[in-house]
Length: 270
Image (cartoon, rainbow, N blue to C red):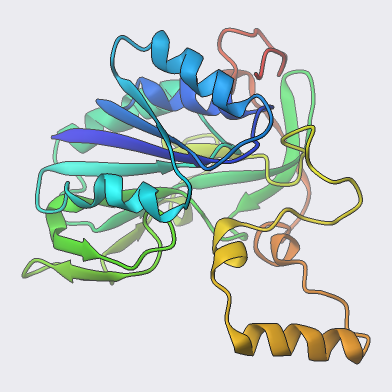
């Protein structure tokens, strides 16, 4: 069994180093794809590559679709593909325990796994405040590529879109929602999703939530006409981050485990 991590980043300098460092020990290989950053993201990823003893490979991509091309060849092999975003900070000790569970074969009959998430609104000294999944949706990305013959494009980015050709006995329904059966405190596969926090100095202030890659590249005439019609009628633009990640009560949790070499502070993120 092998675990291959794949990061797709653009202008993510604040959290990208922490996101990669926490996930790197979980993986046998790590592909870091930079989609044209203009802040320090490129510099940070190349520095991580230099210090990774060959585990991390840096790639520049003019289009996000390149990130899926890099992993498509693992289909049909005993490989778990771990999609990591630069605003996702995993618990490294939890991932170490979770890897042993993967190696034991506990999840061999699953297609993909969804873990516990805290969607962070405020990150303080040793704690974070945000919304838990559940009731929010989980957005972790861990896929069992031994369950498929191929994942064919076109895919706008890694692990999104296209057509999956499953092996006999597997299917898209084999999704295990780990976060539905285990608490945040007991979870091995858990993530701080800092989606509500600024991630780069180049982020425009006061512009609302940053669009995700699928929103930016998945253009259609129907979506464009619908958006224009809504603006003409005075309807506010839908805040998709609030819809997906802002549900339920605001909770406060100890997050020292996510910053093991920073003590109880979220310092040294980049």
